[in-house]
Image 1: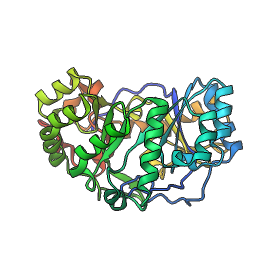
Image 2: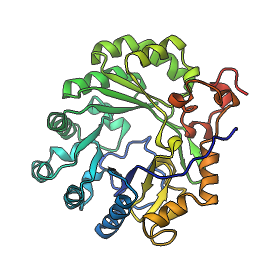
Image 3: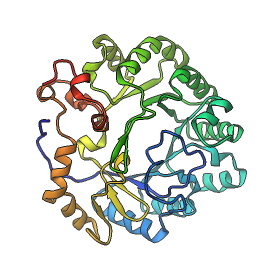
Length: 348
């Protein structure tokens, strides 16, 4: 693979993986195979230190993830600290905990600035197939509360379990009050030194299916949906991509490609991507202690070489492609299991 021109690494956003406990445990989740205990929580001291560090290098937005971060015991306290520090926060949640009246009352008194709501299923039967949970009614109650309170959209993962129900899930999201829907293809998960694709829909099959159901998706959502582009744009029919772009129905190119973010695990380990938390590149208190030492570590020869390798062009055809900034050559995780030459026409 060819290599991109390197630029200095200075994250402008951060993800805090505050816990690993989840009340759903989706079968396709990248966290399923990670070598951490479900009881692992980011303690408040670590959260405060990482917040101070993040703020010192100009990070003004933190995304709180898990696990299921609404189960993190320090969430309300951390939200208060971020508000005092003028740091904006987003929480990524399945919203089930929002159905608990006592928790919801405490949460809305000091909520995150916005929520990113993830929908796993449209029915009790699919929820049981896709997760370890049978809490369908609480899920619906929590989703409806989140959409009403925050006026946000929903996201869902297109995977082997749920792909055939994607139109039902879209209708369910709209019925619950979602303002729009983002569909994100399931990507290979990397843990234990291996890439796992059990729940990833084969690229050609996914493209054919999504193109075929596009008119129905438009009708169900009123055109208010987007597709996270994790495959090269040239793998899709050109007229389909032109339609998505023209209608503002596409999101593409991740923070890793842009070197724009950083992921902190519960114990201060740092990763370059949520799917690569089993492959940390450093740790707070060991490789860095403050913002300046973090930036020095991120821009050290070893780490920049890793970034260069992970974000290299999947094909020399991508080097001069006018759509590369939008496309990014697809999600790098796909190339741990699929061959670029099978997905990039005219691959070199």
